[in-house]
Length: 309
Ligand SMILES: NC(=O)C1=CN([C@@H]2O[C@H](COP(=O)(O)OP(=O)(O)OC[C@H]3O[C@@H](n4cnc5c(N)ncnc54)[C@H](OP(=O)(O)O)[C@@H]3O)[C@@H](O)[C@H]2O)C=CC1
Ligand SMILES: CC(=O)N[C@@H](CCC(=O)OP(=O)(O)O)C(=O)O
Image 1 (cartoon, protein in one colour):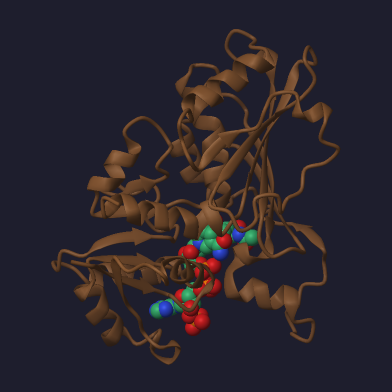
Image 2 (cartoon, protein in one colour; image 1 turned 45 degrees about the vertical axis):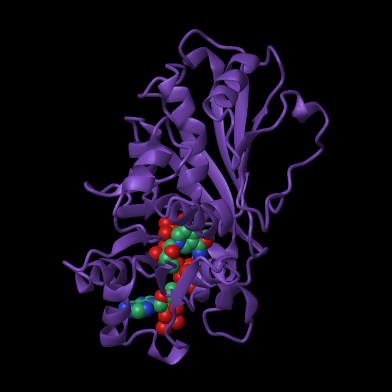
């Protein structure tokens, strides 16, 4: 029997990408609302109740509402919004997070899909905190740049349509300048760090792609590790994984630059360990597509786990 899937918000940026990934699947039946009905609560409720799994690609409040619209109907959820990423009774939808996470997702009724900056950050933090290399109270700094599709339909329009009153002219801008970005609780909880990071995201004039930088002073880490120790800890953590990989050590000597669009149109995340041996510092950099492993790609990976595919 095919599984019934409803993408609530399928006409938005994340929803469209999930629909494209699922379109050719014959093991699924997609319940689909026309664009004009996308905000019709009664029609959404019908599909939310009928679906085996509903994937929510909505703003936070609408995602919470969608869960309540299907209350008691046995629908399983994957929520792409920020609403449930640190909530009790929701499993965090990063299958490679730690041992057993893929199995927890497979068994879950409620999966909170990852945030794009958050998965980049957590993917680098968690192996180091788990290995006892990064003290949980380390003063973490995270700098990142995202493609503008990370801001959804609104930011895409602001970046692409210069005639709009709210058009954005900048080619590259920093934001979240009050240091209170909504991904911070998620990064802290799943990265297992105790001190709030200084997180400065930015957006560039490209549609999809992301670099997340985590610079570290090696003498402030436990046992003053060298670059190879960090590289090994990351490689061991993700050994055998298909969607998370660690680039070879020493790349900094051969790569003149790192393209923020390097992982565009993939569902994979690639971690680099940059620095100079003996230099006392490293910069870990996660490269991903904000709509791939940062959103829609992860959602489909979680869906497959939940369906036992
Ligand atoms: N873009 C990205 O890279 C990522 C996004 N996410 C998260 O995924 C979710 C969706 O984001 P994104 O796809 O970018 O956003 P978009 O704005 O592109 O799409 C959201 C969709 O939801 C619809 N919608 C809004 N409010 C309601 C409502 N009350 N009832 C029904 N439908 C509604 C919108 O319709 P309308 O056109 O009428 O506004 C639109 O179709 C967000 O929570 C976002 O934070 C997560 C990771 C990365
Ligand atoms: C470029 C841009 O605006 N990015 C979004 C985050 C995108 C993302 O991860 O989505 P969630 O909102 O679901 O966490 C932001 O900073 O708010």
